[in-house]
Amino acid sequence: MLNTLLEAEKHHLADLLEAIQRCVYFLNASSQKLTWPLTAEQLKTQHKNIALFESLAAINERFAKLQDTLAAAMRHASLLAGEAHDSFLKVLSFYEKIGVLGSVATWQLCRTARKLAAHDYEIEYTAIAEHFNTLHGLTPELYCTATLFINYCNMALKIEPAQGDFAQDFRIIVTNTDDKSLT
Image 1 (cartoon, one colour):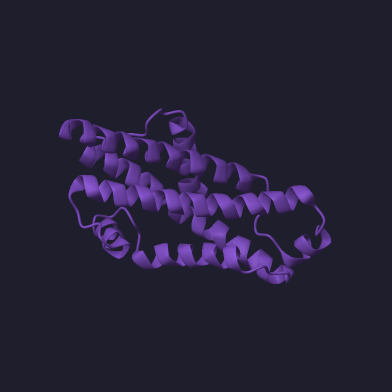
Image 2 (tube, rainbow, N blue to C red):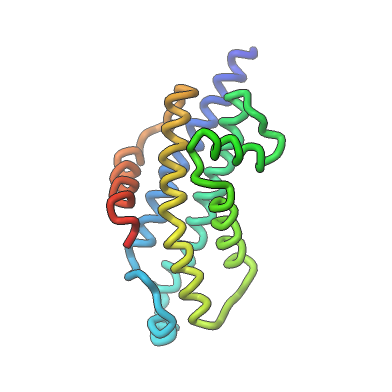
């Protein structure tokens, strides 16, 4: 019975790792549709461009989804590793300590940036451009954390992404991100 429960927990983490790779794949696809950095003038002149604003909405959603999925997976892996997981700050501190997370402060900055978009319906094009340029600038940090976290799960817990459908694409994206830093 306990062995079955443990296997179920490991399988759940493997599914979360697959979801992380999928989130990176789709966030990257949405981001590639745009020319960076965005400008207020560009947004103002294209204020009725449905494809542009659908891409921006997708970036907001996919950035948030990536961070949320990473958070759920980090908490779950902490549980499997026997680490403190009663507060998410302890989870973040653990991953910062072992080098998976660059810093708790950067994680919190990503969280703040994505929350602002969810609760602030900005109509000023300068602020909109600044928001998306900020998300774009923070994306390499999330990609790096995703890579290091998946490596940690493989090395420490012997758990890999479930199906591997996105593994090759994920490696290409994060390698290109490391090389270009999403410029």
